[in-house]
Image (cartoon, rainbow, N blue to C red; front, side, top):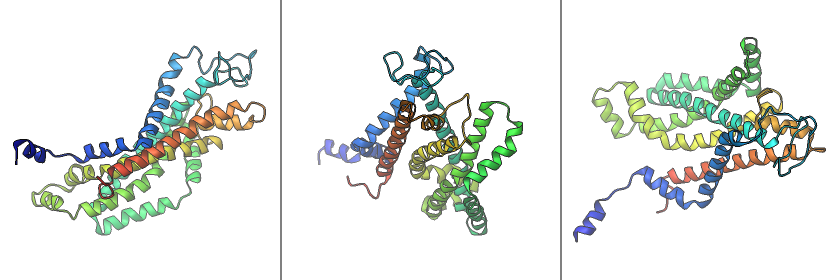
Length: 299
């Protein structure tokens, strides 16, 4: 055996490097990820670069179709629709990411604790999850809004309640996924070794078990973001989500649906960007799931 071949045999590859290589081979997932990043950057940076602002009105212009001056047209108040769509995208993406972060933080800690402790503690914690699953989500949001609205004075405070309301429900599935992973990991040799060293349960859970569940957590998180965005759009459509003067894709679609026969562009453009974002996120999530599935990988 030559030294070169010996060195080649000694070189290893990490799970994340292999997963990235498999993700690169999935052209559709990579394309969708690039498109979504472009839409996100456009929504974040676009309003600063536009010569118009979301609150800038022109009552003489009113609702006009797409033109060189206004690529997406204007609404009934003469506001540039492109700026409104980008501003709405900011809110929708912020809701999706913030609520997903809340669900990940709560669900991972809750599920890992239940799975590691096991026994009666696990049974009690998961029965709480079952009870929360049985509560209709819309009723929960309505009750939360009724209780919190008297002490909320700004649109941003109401938006924070929306973050918490969606995140407080989305963590339930995450907790079940992490619990299932931890139940398997807690019986493996590295967990037994950590126990034999006298490490505390808290350290074993957060330093050894949770890092080994990151693959499924990342995959489910990428699929949670579009689900949260769709939930926010539904809530805004029925008047329980984002409120004016703020806008979101769901609120813009609601306004556009009310005037779609007269001004169809008010519905078409926000609906296209919203649907495209959900499509790209779902395909990117599927690509990540395939890339991180070591057992199903065929190298």
